[in-house]
Amino acid sequence: MLVGGLRFTPAAKKEASSAKVELVEGGYASFDLFEHELVPPHSIASEEEINLVLNHYKITKTQLPRISHDDPAVRVLGAVPGQVLRIERTSDTAGTSYYYRLVARGV
Image (cartoon, rainbow, N blue to C red; front, side, top):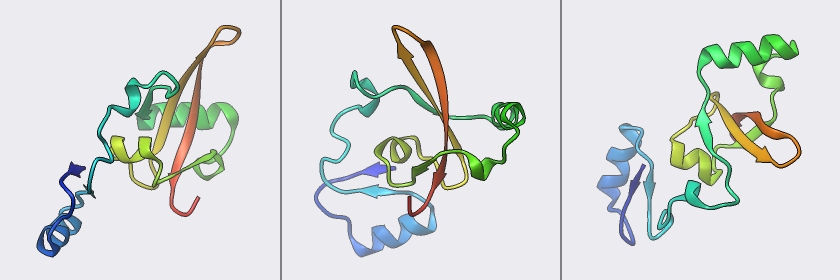
């Protein structure tokens, strides 16, 4: 992800798409999303961790809840459709819980 000024030139956009770099115009990422108190920590889950979860619940990857590829957390992490995010949530009653979401287009 590359955060820039007001606009990128057409040549920069073309080069970025061929290099699989996301260009973000303006002040989109003017603060650290994960520093906000209401945003739980997100990370890209390892294949080993995904397999453990899928085997435990006897499900396939496509049966996981989805998260849009346009979600701000997904964009900041650089996750692509098909990857799985691990979201760590804490509460006073349940302690720490982990939630898994499949990054998908058109959610």
